[in-house]
Image (cartoon, rainbow, N blue to C red; front, side, top):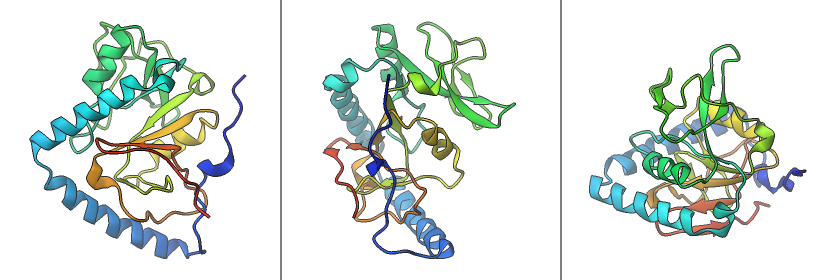
Length: 213
């Protein structure tokens, strides 16, 4: 049986900050990182995405994972979907988030080779309604998108909280943050409830995080 990973997965800011202050800092950092991403040439996006894919595929932890939750990338995120489809065809167990309108949340669904994906309510590709569901407990590796990460594993999302709620349901899974190099910053503002990643993966970085003090 999988056991919850150590509590280093929870953010622990060095000093307490008011929620309004943290929210303002997050908003400012989102604007900065979005500018960086907008300046990233398409050729650099493609080359960095390919390097990230190669890093993932070569990892022994990836190869022996029982079920990996990936994500279908937004335009300003590293491209993963073609790679994940190829991995599923090769026999690697892969799931993607699928929107559950009755629960108003994302839940994992298996990526079935040959099955057509469908655009979800937020225009993100996801498995069709008839794709087999997966339980959160089955996941042992989760690829985590974000606007920014720091080397302590703190993550800055897009402010909606959808992926945060999904991560909160996967305490036994290793969480790997996947990003372009320009998305790694000195410090991500975080609240005590924000969940960290355990590893950062970029084109130039394979970084097991050091827990924040």
